[in-house]
Amino acid sequence: MRAIDVYNGNFIVKSALKIAPYVFVRPVELRHAEWGEIDLAKAAWRIPAEKMKMGQIHIVPLASQVISVLEQGKSVKFFF
Image (cartoon, rainbow, N blue to C red):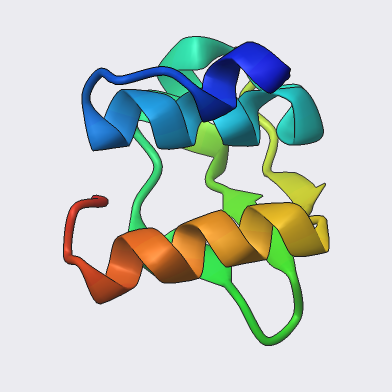
């Protein structure tokens, strides 16, 4: 995790690396996330059934660290 802080690459990649350990989803699910699926107020990400391998809706609770990364990305308009 410390190595992510000194990573000098793309902002989106760095943000995804920060989020991934908290959400435990497949990389493709993280890559295809959309703002409409994320409720920052409820700290939840509702992944629609059609995006999930098992065909069922998946609700991912979002830690405060994830919320922080998402808010930072939204403010610079880099995500989704």
